[in-house]
Length: 541
Image 1 (cartoon, rainbow, N blue to C red):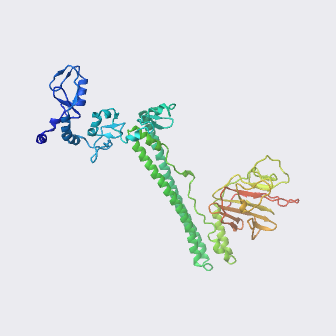
Image 2 (image 1 turned 90 degrees about the vertical axis):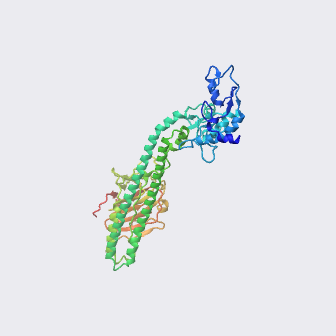
Image 3 (image 1 turned 60 degrees about the vertical axis):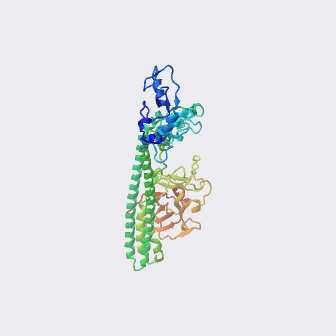
């Protein structure tokens, strides 16, 4: 028998209907063998029941019985033949979950067992009575992900309210009042939205590329400013070589370069962050393009939910690389040589003043903050003390006891302004943070949010804690105030004399800063009646 089997060919194990190796072979009363499925389907289409081979007619539909011997022979010979004939799984095809080694292409997936089967491994589902009751569908990849975790039913619908895939049972309870549509219908809607998402992603990429270029341009300008600062410093130091050691020049270069390096480091960090966002967005773009080609409705809708919203990114409209400040880089090295270097110091301060004057801002006084005794000009540029207490509406912004006024505008970067104090015998001016105390008596110190200088018969003072008495070389005509918010610097200048008065360093600013003016009281003889005037900057002074 073994020898005979060795010589048998595939024709000995082939069904005469499908011409393929027997699958669940059964015998007819006339002795011929067929696949159970083939002969059953054949008789389903016939009016009379006859054998397809010998045409023998049967009065009633024969009761088919499994040919046990033939089944065993098919298992020995036919299985290897069918495996060889089955195609291996290709790209974008569903593999058989049962195959070991070379995986074959799945022909069906079982919604009860969950695996996908190739034709040979599907055979028990076509033969065993219990397995034949299982629901078979076209092969699906990751079948367990396609089943409702709650009801163990295929996810065939899409809930438009909660934007999730649901099964038929879900629509009868949790999603009963929600609008649901077939997956294919929602797939088509979401597919149409992919183009818009792709356009938005591309626009975000372009905006960030533009941000990178703007940062690079800013860094280039900063380097030019740094080079110019070094050149100006070198020019001054060359004239002072007899008085200043070589180390001063090295310290200047190092200070400027360190500040430039800090700015460049900030720029590099921003560029790196932008490049990372571009990479993330590019990956998002690739995912969108890849998703646009999928025809798998479920996978598409599940993936679409994560792609609908763009990845978290920074709002770059408020980000900028602020150039470093070089104000006062030489002043510390010249203080000890003041007596012999007055002329050179004046030149230095003049150059410094010109630099800070580039940060001039336009400001106007805010009448809503003015003390009731103060009188403001119509253009909001002047203020002086009046002799009548005005009845004004209550306003939480208004000073009730301190005779002062703030500007409408506030600043959180570098800014410079000038105030004319000519013909006045007492005044205070400077900057203040937004949250300063305005009701009742005012204590004026940096701790309370005020950085100001005061002038009266006792002289010029910076109102610190303790106060700092300042030298006054001549009568002040105009005071310039420069603030570098990031550096924590507030500097005061005698504009007419072109000299530096005082700088408060190491300040901590956490709120917007306003210009604050105290015009001072005038006596019965009319002294100090002149106004404080916010003056435009004259760079030719």
